[in-house]
Length: 303
Image 1 (cartoon, rainbow, N blue to C red):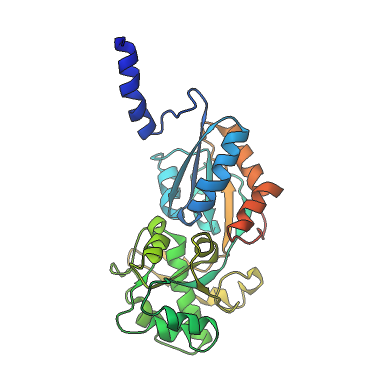
Image 2: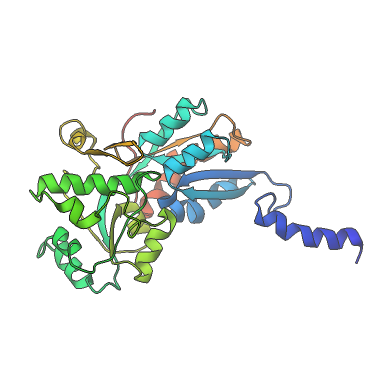
């Protein structure tokens, strides 16, 4: 075997590992940075579909939306598309001059998600049928509750906001502290990309999270009233706006609509592919894929 051929065989796996090339040879790479909860629909449905249609390779990067936005704004990460949940991360990129326009592509709502392997699964099933209070089950001694870091992930912040609204709605003044403990309780905080997998494996008993993520992972859920699920834009000013808190680092957390927004950053290396991806998400086929994974139609205006 010639030396050049041996070198190529040795180098190709390394290049694959770092995302610098793919099995398709010289095909362009579409890089999509997305809210970590969207991993299933992005990596199994949307990404491969667009890559195939555009004769490109797809590379997905899933993480908390705020964490991704900070990496993109600091030029520590490059992407051709950024898909976040809530307007906040998009606004960070607007302030950095990387985004001037973002469109709504889907929406979701907050639900209680529980593991079918949990010792409390029967109690949660009873709560789903209205025979128990879900918040009473979450307060059971020894229950392992999981969430993400509210400082870097909107889902983690929305868990706390949901509990805060539930405290008002059900007249349970200590509910947030009883379920979550400290706002950034290290015993409960996991990476967004691993939270649903931990529930599937029974490593944690329950979480409060996005209905779309739970549906994608085939996990049982408990629906929450509209006053709590953060899914009704009409309730933003009159009810949701009553929830909010300040983290230890001084960051102010406020309730925002649970809408997914997509944008093509100004420094995209493949802007045409990025625009094609956003258009696909907005189109009939992309919306059908999102619906099949448990996402609701987009609502609200462009940012």
